[in-house]
Image (cartoon, rainbow, N blue to C red; front, side):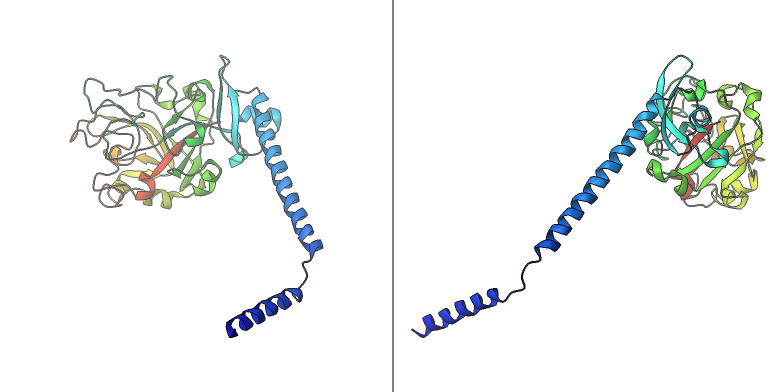
Length: 324
């Protein structure tokens, strides 16, 4: 009996508590709901407008990012569509802000594994092993092969038709940590620079690595970094064998193996395999230890910045090449 009386009291107290509970502010609830709906609609509208703007870029007719900038007054970094002289349409990244803008991304050199010596993925040297019978390797510095996508240029090798189609005057180079998203490349780069003396006009306006002859060292203008920071990206021993503040093409090492590009430096010694990238498919010294897109950057252990080894930052960054 006592149990039932206590149970009845509990029920009565609960009902009384509910009756005195604060009333729901329906006006406030409706206001919050309307606000949330408006925010969602604005975001959807903004996203749609942005996508529509990007889609409209496909209507541009230009062979380079500079032509897009000059003809359509575009000033925003991002992906654009270009058309080759033969009418091929492709997508690439345009740097529209650095030093006046108009820079076209034409290639990226990405080392997928320093441990893999001229193996699958080493498109800028050889994917066929360190082979004296194939000294030119895959030959992608001088042929018309294309591969990869602009958006994944920091995650894999990339080469588009602009590499051989655009008649350029200068180059720009960015070293961007692997896998960074396209919209963060500029801020994430550990090194960015460009040339400004129109030197490419002396070599047909395209890739300097298309010839078997030794090519020049060109002075650079730093956009992020300087001579000192460039020097520290490489190992202690190589620092005694180069001068920072240049970009050099087709450097030859002591064993007569050719490297495609020495980024940010001019060789003064003979071990260019420890600070230059790309090249052919045969490196005679301690085969296959020097063969690969980043040939001997790991000579004294990977990313240790000791002896001949390059820094971890340099080894784990893609090299993006631009024309203007």
